Image 1 (tube, one colour):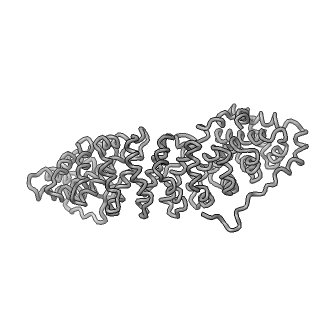
Image 2 (cartoon, rainbow, N blue to C red):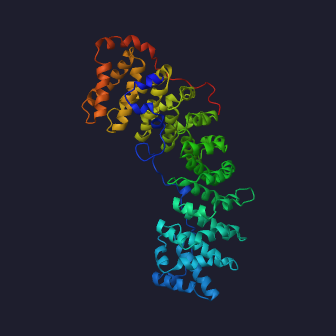
Length: 505
């Protein structure tokens, strides 16, 4: 096999790092979707926000007056002002964050975080700061710069549950701002008091916020989370990924998807935490909010080493992929095909597992009928298989219609994908050379030969050369074409059938 790989024109196909495609900027970047289920930042907006009418008119002047009152030495005036400030920041549309920041409200609110003898004032200040930190990065950093983070961490030990929970929320917004704020919170020791809440005694509303904070701790990649932090949160995630609450389970899976989107060493930490079986089980989820991050985490793991890929296969993940490849949501299908493309970048035994799971027919179906972004992933999956698969495995994908599917896409403008297709076709022709006549016949019958001939005029030199070499090496000899009909018996074009009694999940 290694000798055969050396013969392929696309040298990248001999490089496992190129074949296993992680989530990077560029052609393999998966579509970024805004998820209401997993916002980086969340504002606390009450169902009814009864801002007093006197503060609606001439709002800016009213807000300045409120900030002055918040600094009052009279407790009643101060509490009323802070409550009105909190209410104004809880508006669902265009909260006046910048106006209040310019008026100097942040240091006043941060000071009130120390008012242990007045939990009402403490809570209102925490809530207001939570909503300021839900804003832009600049607004969040102003809260951090005034020393709120260590105070919020201290309040994780508050005897007042509403103050404690609001402090968790505030920390989640700050940590969700990015790696700098995350690392600042880590420096002040945020992890230990957060993970201690992961137990059966924690109220579900608080636990939902806790797992959301953990997900934000895991999220940023530049730089990635420190190893010691990962090692502290993984035992908590092991428990959370088994939770019955859908919100908890969703954020736990997102956290694991972030942690697996890293180096092989980081992936191994996740595997060693024994969460893989639970991630795989969630591939059967009907709830897309849970299914999406679970599938993404599994897909990330198979970008790792062949041994790490095998860990996922050994936990039975392929049994769920018929469901995933036929999912009603295109993003799920795309993610599933991307995952398979990284499995077919593995060993011939791992490719055989894909074939034995009857996944080639639905894979070819996506190649023929899916959206273009999903078709690209299918092209990768087939092209990878033509490099790492045995002759019989390559014959299987040809019999399922891979050549026809690839040739149908030879008219696209994307040069990288065109190169993938031409490399895949070259690999198929090479495998069966010198008895490649049957492959030539299939290519010609489905109109692929005409398209390859046209590509000899392509402006991209790599495309031109690949197309020229295919024509020159495999279609210039009339004797090869004369033998094609005899050779066609090698491909019966019958797709594998599923077991009569269905799949046993």
